[in-house]
Amino acid sequence: MRLGLHWMREHPDRRDMDHVRKMKYASYTLFEPAWSDRDFCNELLAAAPDDAIFLLRHHGRSEQKGEMYAEPKRMGLEHAEEWAKDTNRIHLPLERVYMCGINEPNTNHAQRATDEYETWRMRRMSELGLKAGTWCFGTGHPSTYDLKPENKPNWEWYVSSYLELKRGGHIGVVHEYGLPGTHMWGNNCNRLQYCPFEDLKFVIQESGVDGGTGAHPGQGWQSQAFNMSPSQYGNWLDTYFRVMAQDRRVHSVQVFTYDFAHPWSSFDLQERMRDEFERRWIGGVISPAADIDDAPEVPDTPIISFDPFQKALEWLKVREGGFQNNPRDPGNWTGGKPGVGELKGTKYGISAASYPHLDIADLTWEQASDIYRGDYWEPSGAARQPWPFALMLMDVAVLHGLGAASQWLSDYGPDAYAFAWRRQRVYTLSENVDIFGKGWTHRLDELMKEMDFSEVRS
Image (cartoon, rainbow, N blue to C red; front, side, top):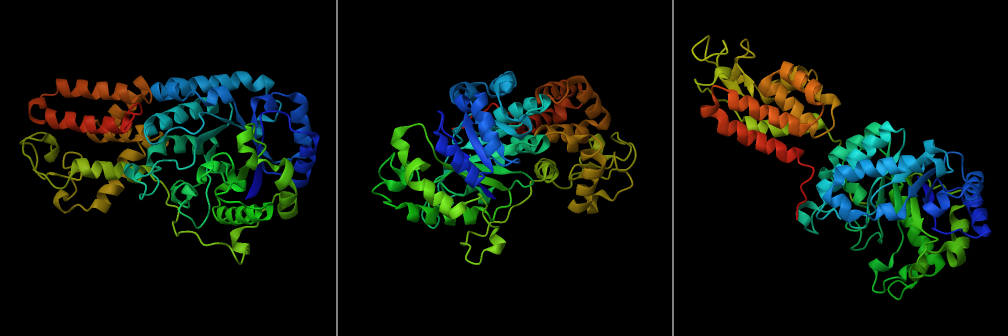
């Protein structure tokens, strides 16, 4: 993990570029006046490392939160297209540029909208050959389970955008301010320790001691709440960097510096902290935690991989239940029709009609899981679809057959709402609708709750 630099909106003075040459920061955040200035970008490229990455923010675009909450898909696609139009005035190598979207969305009330917005924005940017800096979660976000402060941060809302991020080679972005070892730790600060998503990279785009963590907003590390000297603040930052170095997903940490609002002047490196940075971190390299004898301890919260197939299995298990042997259900007969063949029942959704050779009553959940993976998840193409549509496609394959799943995907593409309409049409025309129609409709309703990106919970 290496240091990064969050750059100001306006031109820094020429001494700052000397600082960059010394520090060799691994990442830089630039606002539009900087990334659209050819001369400045050329000077920055000459000073920065050859593998440095650049996070770009368009200030006006990043604040369109109300529009995003109301129409997340439209805004995601629109922002991707607007970034594509900007490429002719971005004077940086696009293969190392990550373009940010909405800044610090409200994850207490707009979780689904945020996930949908970033999913569609990244998907379109991938099609355009561009990279995104996604999420840009603010301090204290994402929200906790049930919005209770004592609960862990809930990353499950963002499965779809995570999969799109991973698929397109984008990068995750988070902001956080707080002190290790205080009440801020694990609440406002270091929420990544609870993130179950692996095989991706994060930039901590804003960090440090912000006025919001103390009693005097706008004064940060120099406030009466902290009253730190540059050396003391450097000690705190060193602790923070070493802790974050233990998470191999973290590409770089950007201390919020050179800010454009004077009340936040305590972020500024141009005066008191410049020499401290150069004294401590010349070259910008933080050693891996494994090589540090005195690395601070952090809570033991191992990263848990997200497995869409296992999540689909959990959903199916709840809806399918255990063994049932209703003689009116054609799936329970080995012949596929009531009164034809042997009545052997259905267990975990595995029916005698589809698997007449199995002893359905003694079927184990492990056997059912193997069947679902080998006969439905993989062959239907669900394994290659983004979550949550992957669940819809698999459920269609389970209830209506692989042929239907393949045909509907060809007819409608990955459109969950078109699939729901087609399923309801099948139910309406079924001769068993008077017997099973209520249950089918309830299952579809439960499934669509997983698909409904547009819902904003309060």
